[in-house]
Amino acid sequence: MSKYRSIIVIALAAACALSVGCGKKESTTTGTSTTETGKKFVIGMSQCNLGEPWRVQMNADVKAAAAAHPNLEVLYKDAQNKTPVQQAQVKEFVEQGVNLIIISPKEALPLTKPVAEAMAANIPVIVLDRKVEGDKYTSFIGADNVKIGKEAGKFMVKLLGGKGSIVELKGLMTSTPGQERHNGFMEGIKGSQIKIIFDADCHWLEPDAQREMNSALSRFPQIDAVYGHNDPSAHGAYLATKQEGKGREKQIKFIGIDSLPNEGVRYVKEGILTATFQYPTGGKEAIDTALKILNGETVEKNIVLGTKVFTKENVDKGGAPL
Image (tube, rainbow, N blue to C red; front, side):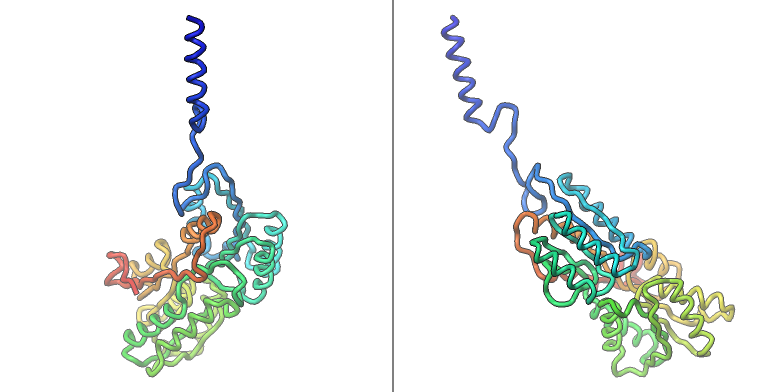
């Protein structure tokens, strides 16, 4: 009987050896949306600042998307709206040897060299929201700011019947979104009788917009509308107008960009903003693209996100795609 038992044991051992392993499963992948099972990747993310609610939401979207992949670790850094700090953060990620960098630059030109140096060190870089100069990056993800600005301009023309005096509260004009949202808007109002009687760089910040709107209100008795490069700027202009105490907040139309649910979209529902144009954070798309890159896949150089407009008429229906 012991002879037969030995034969059975040998047979079972052979069968186990021919399989991947007794009690062990073969490492597999689940397609283009995830990295190899068991292989850990570290992503360094440099956010230009966390003083804007939209950027807080971007980080939250990145974190939520990354949480679905346990083999991803994301290191978050806040540049606190300081370009030299962000330059140093990119260099630090390179020195740490992270597998990939996601950066949302404060300014285009000053971040171009650090990003190029990361690429030279064979670390892929995803540029999110704001661009850098040249093409030394792996992929750029963002909405078409020129298109959004142009649509805002066309909306303004229709809203005011083709003529009027407006205030433009700009984003940071050393950043590409600020420049593009202005240029697009100028295209949108071209040929109309709409005049920009006051403009200021508000650095995307509501307090700055409120202060600049106070200046505009003190100088111009007739203001028909405000074009804010983001919703905080438009909201800051509304607050300044309301605090003026002349009731002009009921006549002036306020338009913004971003459309966060608890910010721009809510302002439209409350009747504070006439319209807000969506600028997606791209957080989820950044992680999806990072996973493809880490899997060795080729990704698009420029990934353009869609947009919507939210008005009183469509806000409860989720806005209207543009």
